[in-house]
Image (tube, rainbow, N blue to C red):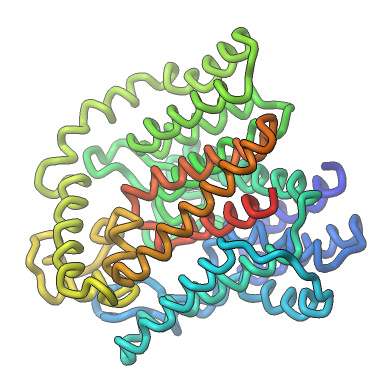
Length: 446
């Protein structure tokens, strides 16, 4: 822990205090340099930097990869990210080391998913949206295999510290956003691109939603729910952190995240803590923010029915799901192509939610399985589902082999939380989809 604490402090200080993308990108290599000073292992240092790069939502040259149709203000299909640069640096070093590891079924499925996504280009050769998606998935797959090659069991503890540090830094940003009542204005806030003054709930403009270092409050909530189980691996300062993280979860005002996060937390204290007194302390710590801000919680809960009214968040989800199922019926095997759903739905305009002059995150498919099936067909969905099953199977074997293996249980809860949140949010083309690959690396190592 002491070896990586100072490099992490320098890393996050550079990102926060220097409002420049140049320094933002340099921070990852500054981190690698200080880690190299501590470990004398450049490959390991870059691998640790790559782990943190997976949480990055900042890039360069995005204007060169804007998706179609441009006039509707679509998302950026791909950009040069810290992952791009670190992968380029780490690739020759990893090949030179000639490290050989046992290939697992998960590795084959990751490769198969990339292969099928690349093959979809054959069916839609003139769609730059599909091409940009393959760029991003290729980059992510390369990062996965580089981490698989270079990380071992002895790296699990440092990686846990890296993950928790990312969680705490995003929570620090969320805390500043909540105190200011707006975005901080830092370069690490991708939400500045779409909402410079911050986000509020659809049902009430008075409820400001914190986004941390994510592009949307719901995506920040995905990070919080997925990474929260790693707090129990620290063994220290757990109670203060179990107040801060639930507070951030509350301030995202994601009702779904409250429910799933609460279930994951209860599972955590049942699994990891034996003494009843400690369980009660942790439960009180987690509940404290919701008790203190009960009026805000009540306001959000009582507005739940409005989400099902025309134009409400859940009504829009339902309409989008209907549209997605329609496309899936037409193209069951190959799908309509990655990143083409909003484009085609806007052209057909069969639902009122697609008659707006611009596109928005609300009209994306809010379900990971339906999203992948619609865009890559049942073939792509099958590969992804088998990939998820293989992860659960590896965890089942690891826990059965050693029932006291806390890391396996942590990864199990983290994967369940991510999978649950993915059923109601569009993650396939977001930074949060990388969490599946990060967890897969750790599950294959544990």
